[in-house]
Image (cartoon, rainbow, N blue to C red):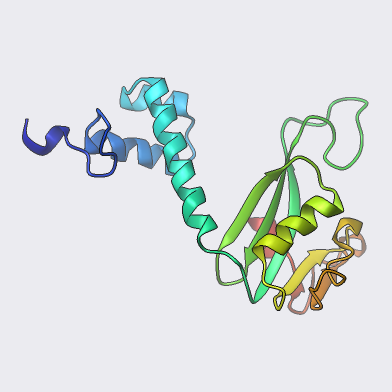
Length: 177
């Protein structure tokens, strides 16, 4: 059997490096663990465990790249099923809220948040972005107060007027991400 059963990426794994690379390829293509299991022949619990380890490793690497600096863009997004009939409002009921910070020409930080309160968003910005940075956001009122907590260079784009950029002030990068 030789080196065929060894895996230099997952030391304690009972799958070959070749199978691990197949799972990694599926992970990078955003294929579900169930479908990955079907494609590779690896049991779904094993595939889930490996995908979880990959996500944790990505998180650890991203957490070591902070604080973000220079010009950053901030925005929130809502993920989930279509709007439930009768439920209205920002994000609507039952959706997952993800807050993101993009460093122009650099890294990205995203976090699933329980709500989009001013306190929640400002705490994340304060923990992940250097105070000297230039912050770009839309004109949503939850971003009010960034100047008060030390971010004196806070520029905003008013999407309500169908404006998506004002010179260097835009959030197209984080919205695209």
